Image (tube, rainbow, N blue to C red; front, side, top):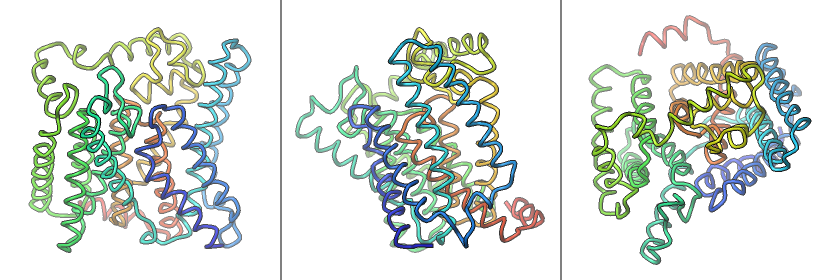
Length: 424
């Protein structure tokens, strides 16, 4: 392969990771277009060197894998075509078409980026830029508060200097924490341990400062899964868990002096604790209402749904997404489109788990943690919808596919995999 050309691919991927926390700025539509641009750059860069040993990468996938992707594209294309043919609302037509194009580019990015990852060694690529970008974002927010405390955020807008929405940057902060934790679980050198401890505390303090309960819940759950996955004895796993709890507690304490708004940090958690006696529907920030309305609409058109961006235009509430990836898929593309969507997710989850167990490297474990955290979070929020997190999901999924292809080519036996599972 032409390594000079693939150097460009690496640059585009690194820039995409670094800017994931910043691409939205004050407008999510602009952020989506920026992500779309970087995906196009990645695809074009790889397309110019499309072969590995004179064979296109698709040849390494079996027919079931490729047919699932093709069937998914056909179903979402059919649902989108119905909107384009029958809809007269120009805004709906535009947003539906953009959403459809974004999905196609997400799929294309995953498949083509797996070419790049397939052609390099694991040590040649790192996700380190994610926690580093969060440190930079934290510093910018801190400086902005000191220089102009009235502009850092309004209670009505949920906007930061570096992001359109505090919840969306929370997705990326969560992943920055995960990368640091994976390194702390594996490395033994004191210098590196100190580096990643510092990075984790800064990232985790940021996530507490943002006050995102959903991100903290998904982060905690994925850390527990990671510790369970690592091949260590029970005592060692308990020590890992205890150390992580201590670091998270320290991060929370550090965030307290900066929790100067009613919406963030310790103040937000105190408000939440005070309302624990209220019904669950009252402390879910309207999610139950979103889900109920989505379910009622899904039951009316269960097969092919209402097309892309259905939630924003079909519901009375009118949010961009229903804060649940499954409901969103059913609402947009119906049961027919959701089945291949779930099959692809299960395939990625299954292989990210096998990869992490068979070869517990930093990248394999991080991809497992990232996918786990995003999927958990997608049950009550929109990380599978927003561009800030989707570009990272695409990169991690492509990495999982490339490692899976390498593993299959090495003909790793079922006995070896089952032995790895039994050793957990």
